[in-house]
Length: 366
Image (tube, rainbow, N blue to C red; front, top):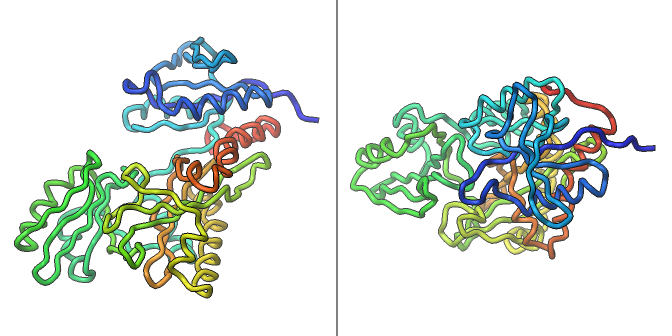
């Protein structure tokens, strides 16, 4: 017999002036309604409305009248961390994590370089990862350009394809193509490598990494990747929730939906470009990454609740691990197969929270 849940789940959301008082209201409302049905109250909390002296928060509740109302509540028992702009709220996050009465469902991953350095310790996963270097100076990019036809430069922390650039400097072609930090597409040509590197140096205002450019597109030039969503659910174990292909604009650089990409069903999309033999190998390699990566990364990093694993496949059918995100978006899964993944994609974190309550597992820090 299941025990009645005590306490509540707090969704730690990002304060917003554009979508007052926080974004993702539809998703959070869905979780609060589902929590009500299973007996686990769900509230939204903001890092700007926490009183550590009284150990209380201003919490937002979605009512049966379909309205958000706010009320003062004691600290939540569990926290589902969906906070972005983490540097701004670093102090509040650390203080919350230090509270022995609070369990975080998972802890957000570090930057791209830290994740890379964790994952290359697993030989099987390392075989699928492109060489990656921090851009400590333009010499790093220069050295890569001496080896590879083109180089990808991307911010260590940004997501959604923002700030990602392809740098080409070969023969008499010197150019940079990509998205700026306002997510606008740009193309720039230069007369020589020196002027290219001088311009690029002025763009690298944040910490960046460099990787060889991989041909992760269809023969027609459509960039695509595979988003695999893995989550913990009601049994407390990792499982694959679904996989979707994201395809961008022809001759584009990224496939993110926010940059104009479209979602496609996984197998029918790949079947257009790869033989049956290639497909079998691709499936095997992706299955291996999906099985091995979550527990291995968790063993190095600390507790996690869900991961978006981004896989690239080059023209020869080779599988590459491009990125791992601990706060994955869900848009791709709403747009394929009549939304058949939508329920599980949204509910699994709540199911895992309920599992923790029922089994009294977890502490404030892993």
